[in-house]
Length: 275
Image (cartoon, rainbow, N blue to C red):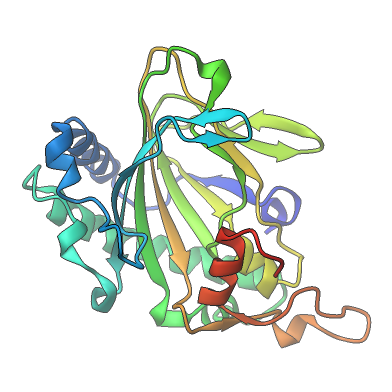
């Protein structure tokens, strides 16, 4: 809770997800990105689709004078009702089983995190999770793939942003690159083998009425090594309304955010419209 107030980010060790499962998750992701381009394109997001799910590449796209340098794959891993297996790679063959197992394990960790963050606000243990969508919260897996880059000074893996999600639980690989903005400085996130990096996202900042901070972060790329990461974004369902929790609003603490359907919040943010 203290880290979420001051930083909006923290790392979790001794979380109970077996280290060998994390390693296998990384292995099957790496194997997918090592496939020939045409095999990866099978999972590309259809051009007309309204979903974010699928394979894509941003290599070479321009953002504020810097080139983007990343490929990615998005697909939901929970709840079962919102999974679309057309975006889950069939190669490597163990990809599906590994991701299903990881979904079960990461849910246990997330429930604990929501509980402690709720208690950290002086609330009942279930309040924050319920305020973000309860059992309907959608778990969106993304694999980020940042290939070696000849001119890292001219590129960014991902430009600076806060996450749309309530919370993001991320597995990094050993190549550093995640940077966090604090006290007017960009600070490198330390790599701790087997640890999970947890970002507070916009929806928890809103629910906590600004007590917890969504972390401003970005990703750099490496000249010689491939950097990869596996964030899982915890998002409310599109029609779910998120606003400051009534328990945290009183005459001394007026609401700092407007209640909004998550899909409307996402639309405004992605299209750079005022909230």
